[in-house]
Amino acid sequence: MRKGKIVGAILCALTINCAIAQAYSGSFSFEIYDNVTGSTKHSLEAVTTSCSATANTYHATEGDTTTKDSYTVSLVETGLFGKTYTSVSMKADNVNRSHSYGKISKGTYNVSVVNKNSNAAAGRYIKGSGTIKQ
Image: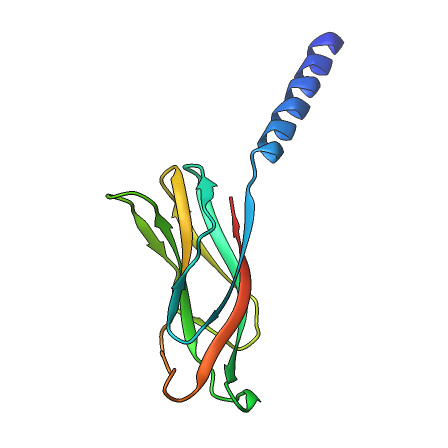
């Protein structure tokens, strides 16, 4: 019986290590007036995927501004019939925000960030960074 527990413990440890080794974390950064799609390709598995991002709203000549814009972070699958997964609207107020896309399709994705207020004429832009996690 003791031998069975040891074998079970070893198998459990190997399974946990394999699960940890498969985790993915890819970073992105952005500075946008309107929208941008990054060129970095993220190879993602068909598992639950999330992003966390921190961004702030700035004015071109005045720096940090009290008027805060909102943005979304999308995962855009490459290819002709690629799927797109879009986050909820997140406020660019220098607070870390997270979004779960749920289980996505396995594939290669680019990150796209859209300023929902698009105030280029007013001189406001959003600058931030984030991480895609699986």
